[in-house]
Image (tube, rainbow, N blue to C red):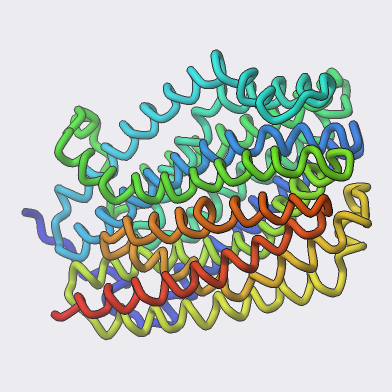
Length: 447
């Protein structure tokens, strides 16, 4: 075992450390949210509600890809940070390379989905030929060329695991800016580029992801002395891969449940209000990312701190980091709640979306924001200490046991605006579950 010097995650004051770790990731994830919205903005300008609905139909699979990438990254992040806390450099190096092995395996899976699965997935959600055509074109490109997504996420997690969140921000920012620049050029045919339409949004997305993946790889090789990417560690170690997946799979399932929820909601919304609810739901999901992405950035900074100090057996630092994270998450969500309550019309008008359906949707769904902020932090705490199954149970309970059935029952009224109440109902119940699991986790930190 090779000794390594004490990392800042074990020595810096907790508030300074959390902000130092989280703020760069929060900024990069806000940029990520921006380019998701830019995609929708230009597609809406190009094809109206038809284009927006098409992106909504593609979203469940896109969300599933992100879930698999991020879930794998959660496992790598937690194990790598814990190994560094234990001063086990050789194991940390091997975990990093095994994460790359998993990234390529995930890409192969979605390559097959792109070749064989996009049409049945899209057609299961819509019977409108023009929407189906746009959605299939967009989704197939995103799946077949998704290698950039998986490499980008794993490279960001390696940087975050060692405390180099500024470099993680650079990585994600490079991809996001590339996408934002290419969107109007490739969608509308600017600067001599062919007019690809909605396909252009997909091409811009995957090119941005590839750029981020390359930048992240270079940052890890050149600027990350706490991690050594050695070729011989690419040989699959199935025991270590199993440990990564043991932590990561519950996170994957938890996020994948979001895809099932979106798929189900699209089908519940489709018969009502001439299908406008699907477009509104798509726009809402893109805009709410501006509120939720900073929380996810906060969590990405928090997880390695908790995992490192778990390995170093520093309970007080873990408890203080959790408390600070809850305070910051609640504050961010409160600001998001105010924006969605006060300015729904202005937000919807950016995408030429129906106000009659959209305004009540934004105001009702956003009532769940503050509860969601606390729940997200607690779920990430469970992942950081190796209890990812608690987070999975919360996600299943919130989205499949409560939200989808509640949405269906509320849809029986025939009023699309009643469906949105399923979100705050589900979030309050999930917060109760999270508080119970947090108490269980803290009792076990008895060192």
